[in-house]
Image 1 (cartoon, rainbow, N blue to C red):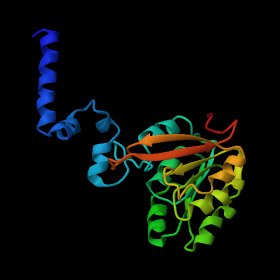
Image 2: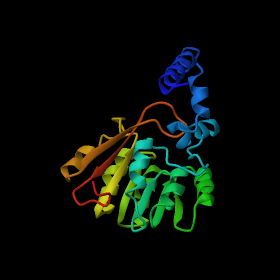
Image 3: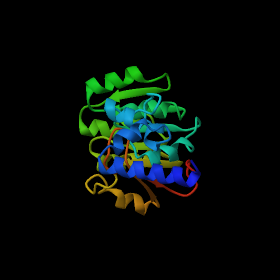
Length: 218
């Protein structure tokens, strides 16, 4: 069989597969599929954000995960509003991770998963949740992915180092981003990433809020 005939046969088979609705099944078994390589099918089946090896991932668009993978370093410190599988992943990428969580059961579960360079602070009330960063001081990266997000942006930005950045999850939601005007006045710009996330199949959006000479080299 020559190459032209082979390619025509493959296209014909795929056409039948798509029309019969078997595409997702075939893709899940095709080793070169990006969804297989990044572990999306495994993540979807288990209902948790993990990679192909079963290791934790942040619940962020894959494009954002790829971006952070090459830019985070062990010289950086990170504070996270809202803990989870992401906390474990960040611990593998930076020097120190501190997360605050308002759900006591979940915070205890996540803390058991963390290596020695990570910790979780439990703060139940919204005001204490926002101010938990007081215990840490200046950090290079702040993740906002929990309750009272507008208040978190307003309060936490003053705890960034000169090169510090903010990662804003679910940045398409206006109610989460209502306080960004103040950050823009401080010189912050926005770089946005969209796409599917581990275990989910709807488009998500996350943004990086940054200033010149930032720690992610944007």
